Image (cartoon, rainbow, N blue to C red; front, side, top):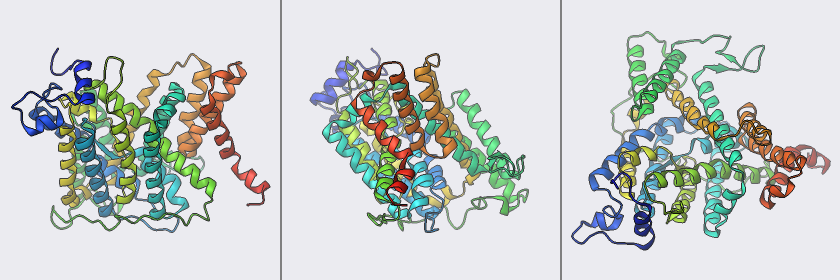
Length: 485
């Protein structure tokens, strides 16, 4: 058995019973169980570095997603958002490394950020939205402590889990296309190519070129393809802007220029700017649905990612169970609260952690390395701010494409499966609402099972979800009937 493929039993004994490394090893080896897991300090450092390179794009994309106005018309500063994103990722990943002791890195979840920007902020202020984020993190931690998180995961049909991931992928891709100016609200149609049926301006063409470059690099298996594509697109943008080829006014997020030095102090101006309450105008039902949506957005991908990466790293036992899973899930939930307090939205485990595992990472030391890289980025905000929004938006579309690959797990020949999956996937981007997509999928799944005479297969938890989502769709007429509206 090679070091790249550690026997499950050995890994389980190490993580579950605390088997110590051979005598004479360093304290790092003893604390992180490096030798028993068939790794080395050099491999862990290389794996942690690779993971950071693969997910560093979040420092650009998260501020882009959270750049909109809230219900009060206020926005969050770009520098403050970059600082918040780097800080929350650093702290969450370091916690996973030191206490979870597994090679999993965390950062702002694009699905969670998408919900905050498109569904939460338009209804309340940013501090209140971040309060929602803290609440969702607390809810997930409670679900882990009570054991309900794994029970819920088992109750929802596998096809719907894949559908939720795919729907969020299309939703994220749509955000990227709109942010880049590739998709606009049409004059005679709901949407159109560019503002008048054609692409307008150099920045959107640069977006298209960056997008194609990333796809080409991925097709060739280039490590860190997203980051390489963004850096390349940014360099080209700086050159074109310097030569005067592009009018600075065409850049939606400002011209790609370095203002001042490359190093600066972090901007913690939005740290701790969290409000709980003041939701009278929104209503208790809406607040509950927002928290529920955020939990859904960060729930399924994290569970699947933790198990998937853990299996790839050889950390599961002979029954496919991962010792210490509850600890990793708890830290993932804590990431939601950390992100809310920091002003960066909920933190969740990134599937890019698998790139570090592919380089040999097997322990939490690699996560510590990744976390330290994010911490270092706190002082290089000016460099990050150079990246044009149009270039960064290309990565959103790429991530959407990657999430859509879950379609291969769906039995499209079975209508009882295909219809709920289809509704979940298409309604999310078409309504600009993750909740609406999940609701449509759950309700249609239950309805079709009843029509087939298989109501017993639905399960109590799914019946409960169906009832909640029926109320969600009928909320307006119900409130009107009760005289609330």
